[in-house]
Amino acid sequence: EVQLVESGGGLVQAGGSLRLACAASGFTFDEYAIAWFRQAPGKERQESEGIACISPSAGRTYYTDSVRGRFTMSSDNASNTAYLQMNRLKPEDTAVYYCAALHSDCSGYGNYDYWGQGTQVTVSS
Image (cartoon, rainbow, N blue to C red; front, side, top):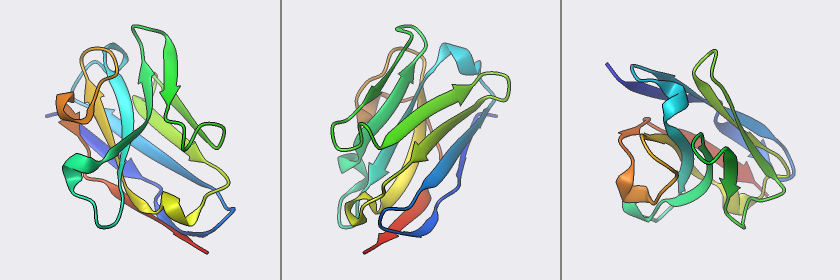
């Protein structure tokens, strides 16, 4: 059974940090692009913003402009876990954060094979 389980969300003050984890099982982790998306309040799920992605085929990590320099994505193939270190958090980072896996290179929201259940991140001002 394929599973992606996010953890690490919570409530934090602006300027603080959180580290999200995405534990994967049921597929060959290092063959998949792993991405983080976030669904902001009031937005539909399909409007989720892709914020970071690790592409094993390309050997690189991608970030969207709004998080570049503040967020760092990493992965540990030994434990089949991806991480998102979030620093200097802002109220506009408040969202439900999802991880997703795709048996290809990083891509848009609709193309991912597997999704986690999401974890809430709330940043207070």
